[in-house]
Amino acid sequence: MAKSNILSPIFYNTLQGVLNFQRGFQPQDTDIILASFPKSGTTWLKALTVALLERLKNRSSNDHHLLLSDNPHGIVPFFEIDMYNESLSPDLVNFSSFPRLFSTHMPLHAMHETLKESPCKIVYVCSCRDVKVMLISLWFFGCAIHKIELDKNLLGSMFKSFCSGTVYYYGPFWEHLLSYWRESLENPNHVLFMRYEEMKAKPRDQIKRLADFLDCPFTKEEEEKGSVDEILNFCSLRNLSSLEVNKTQKTNNVDHKNYFRKGEVGDWKNYLTPEMESKIDMVIQEKLQGSGLKF
Ligand code: A3P
Image (cartoon, rainbow, N blue to C red; front, side, top):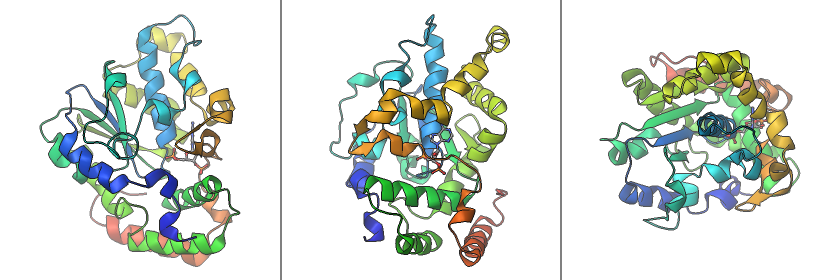
């Protein structure tokens, strides 16, 4: 299988989607945009954000929780993959609720013109857990959605593309990362930069950080009654992957179960050679030099 085809069932019209988004999207001040490079923890970030906003609806139980009836990707669609890929003006009727919640894999510079006057909130999640694990995660995902065996040749060609900055449709990983990193430093009220491995290591701190940024901080009462842990447990990989909607259903030809695998830090060690490992480390070190961003 050609490496460029690995995510084609999902990204089949993405470039058109980016162009349509740039021409057609009208931001609102209260919009929230969840951004990431593919396989960086997007599903988790979407689930946590939905759960944070759902709690504001003040229901007495979780029975009608949005995440029980749909996958996080169904609730928070991607601009360029699900919305603008076929139209300049997609139907936004499902976004009448406040605030509107969108997602994207575009680098920030691709949205710059469209969002330049907008104070909307952008949360970026980065798989600094290890860029290498992101590559492995993509490899598993690509093979799973194509229902093929894990193919080491495919991993080899994805590795080369990754190091040369031509993997996927979103440009070099390091430019993606740096576009959000720099803006998060310059404009911290506009862009929040989150790291997957920090979310794993200190989930309570990170979800509170997210809630503060989204202007829906946990109250003292909520903290006392355990709301923080409740949301973290509800959005855990184990819980989400056990929900009926994620075990049995699919969206855009992708089985929801494929969005959940191990979620471990360091999983790449089982698949990449030491040479591949040091090459990736070298590329990342060189590209991020002087940015202040360290893995
Ligand atoms: P692995 O393939 O390393 O297991 P994305 O959501 O951007 O596609 O990223 C996919 C990675 O996030 C996968 O990593 C997946 O297992 C992990 N993941 C999905 N849901 C998660 C959750 N609720 N908590 C932690 N990790 C999660």
